Length: 246
Image 1 (cartoon, rainbow, N blue to C red):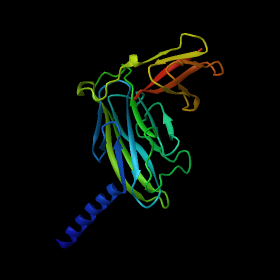
Image 2: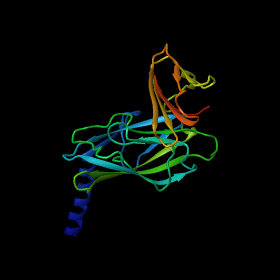
Image 3: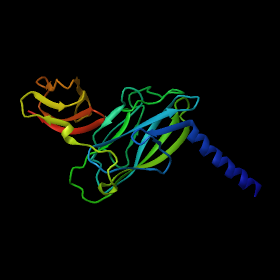
Image 4: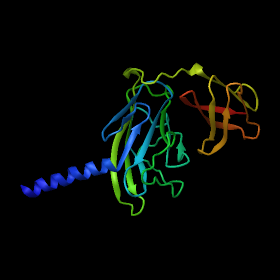
């Protein structure tokens, strides 16, 4: 009995120590994300930003494993995952895939350091092809000691899109108006400063522009014709939009 009790105390202590080694803040709610939590969003183009803080004494890295996707195929999820410089951005989430925060090499989170708000984010975009709800993305975040690759801690959570859950963050598309009607030009009308990134379908950033409210034209004549992903952040709102350049 004493051995079992000691073993139980060890397990509890290990779990608490892992949680104390890092924290995950959901910037949109102001609450820490804990193991088993569900992030629920209900409006289209909603972006959730997570901020990880390294409370340990060693640099660390992380992986994000997709355990299961329910009622969608992953094409409705766009996300960025990495430490420093925004990491890698992806325009779908594949079931069974594991994504590495260190994909850009030596991008570790140092002791006492926190990620920026746009280094780890998830955006669900309702495309109308999947009509069953809720749409769940069951995810496993594993934190590793960058020095010896040992596991510091694991946090399992679910990102859920459920239109019946009630609005969490109202997104008004009319605040940001996008037009590609003019040849070689993208027009973005916003009443706030707009930070714009344009990606090709391989995830490579091909253009980055900051527009003031009195500026709304982005020249695209130097880019090849094809499909691109436009990412706009303005006035605390954020959206991804597929556009076709001709």
